[in-house]
Length: 233
Image 1: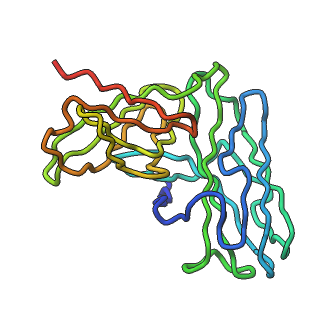
Image 2 (image 1 turned 45 degrees about the horizontal axis):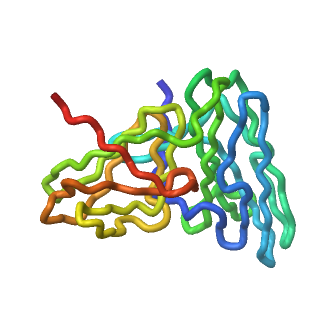
């Protein structure tokens, strides 16, 4: 069995821009009826930007994001140079049939190169989410379930995503039984892929988060309440 290359997403910079390089869109959706999607790179710097692009299957395991080289999705061109103040179009191409019910998640990783040498430590790396959409229609927003769990290092918020649509979680907050709002994670807190669950550390509270509710913005939509998961029998 061939060895898989695993990459931690924590090594990658924030989406949208990588030091002089602007990437659009910052999230790539590949509809079931379309075999490819376009990604535009714009070099806003004063020097050429040699790079290599790769696609990885995006998996979540044990509260970590991991990447495995993709075989059912391709990017063209894979090696290129964006001229100073120039642009480059990339094509993300689906090689097989779309999924039936739940979307599949990938990451497009663009790594800066130094001439013909392989990408090296210290050079810039950018990552964009890629979602291959299923033939069946997806809900307008993910349906999540939240629960507070006790841990050795304090309470944790565990959020489950049982549905077919990824969840992009932002501006996570808690509103106590007294109506007071406590911001927890401003801006992007993270992603929860279909069928997965993620945990976030919480500050300790005297009430143990009883009687309150968690709020968040999902997939850049309006703020919504996260329903509580059913207690185990």
